[in-house]
Length: 169
Image 1: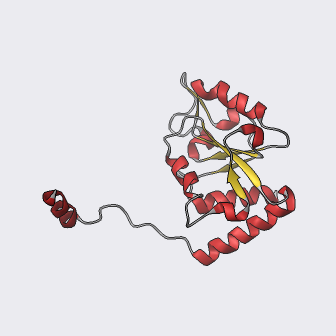
Image 2 (image 1 turned 180 degrees about the vertical axis):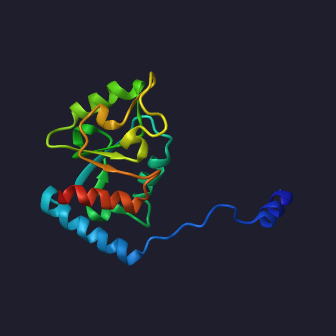
């Protein structure tokens, strides 16, 4: 055990430094989101996240929206377990052939009006997987998409800005 601690101290931090988002800018963005959510959704918007075949990079960023730093729930954004309770579908990854039917059923189970957001480069264009025997490619090839949030993966701040741009559309 002591050798492990010695190795950790000797090695130090090897991951890249992250650029911390400006807290004041994030608060301003959140207030604008809250204003739009109050105006169009009576105080809260429900999002159902769907992994249609991603590498989980986008899911990690989506999960970060709920951590104490971003805490999007304070702006009226919350994630739900069922598409029947959702206003927005947040779809990540290229749609694998195995997930195509599940994605279609989820889309049909979501009450109207509904929005679909394709998150990440793979959801936008199929990424390096493209269209093949195992992949349908972009989310738009399977269900209608209202907005695409590009990035590999997009940051939580980019996700909130994308959601805000959809509400202002």
